Amino acid sequence: MRMPVLLLGLWLALTCAILTRRGDACPYCKADAAGLATAAPPADDADAFPLMLSGGLDIASAYYFRGYQQADHGPILQPYLNIFTAHTIQEDLVVRPYLSLFHSSHLAANNRMADMSDVMVGAVTNWQGLSVDSRYAYYTMSPLMRTPVHELGAKASFDLLTLREGSEALKPFSVRPFVGVYGELIPEQDTTQLFVNVGVEPSWRFELGGTKIGLGLPIDWGLGGNKYYFNSDGTNAVLGYFATAMTASVAIPVPEAYGKWFLNTSLQYLHLSADSTIAASGGVQDLCIGKIGLSFVY
Image (cartoon, rainbow, N blue to C red; front, side):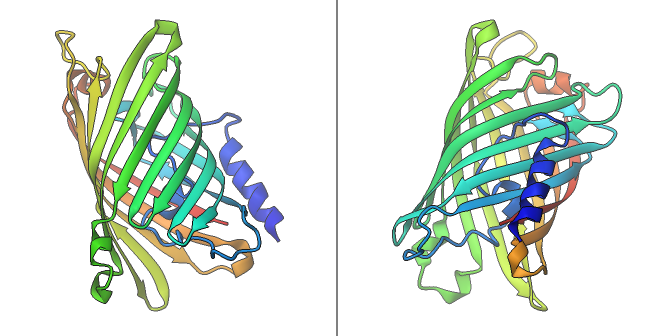
């Protein structure tokens, strides 16, 4: 029964015959945007390292990577696949090593990039309310050229509501402040750059008519060093962008043998701050980006 899902996951990842890139990889990635399927395996699970898959396909109205425009018109298809395992070290400590693939195809003329790709290898460690995602990424990011980039970084977040663990009323909610720090090496230019992402991710999980639903309101700021973002006079710009979004995930009823499936949608407001991001966007500073997709966790 696993073979159909495996084949679908591989198809989603290889639709355009190339690997891909995302800014916030994890075993569930956008396949589980609001935490509907993130239960850890039982501590006494006979299979100590179960192999799992998550993935999906998003259709977006535009694609901005860390504030830099990649595509803003035509069909924009974004398949992704994550292969990971989970190991419960002790009751509250779970480690999930993963391999994450992502691709963004921009199927219209005159977009800044025809496509964009990456592969990531990392591990997410969860302990009580703390989550740390450490990873290495290889990808192409520049909106003007396909320069390969090596990146090392980590994102740490903590669910503040776990401090009130005894409260039944708060169990459906989470509020996760986060900070991500990523260092990039661009061999062709012999340069290094720094990207820092800070924000908060509130979410609400509930059931309506027996259907699981997750809502989120992520807010984040993109910061840069060593001219990751820059002003028109060539100086470093600390703030690259500000973004907030409304997200929703709805569980799709399927037989248990086929994993967990979700319909995802989001509407993001993006404000570009640095001159470099505004120039890459053709002078546009404020915009809304819509996205809809189908995903699975298996």
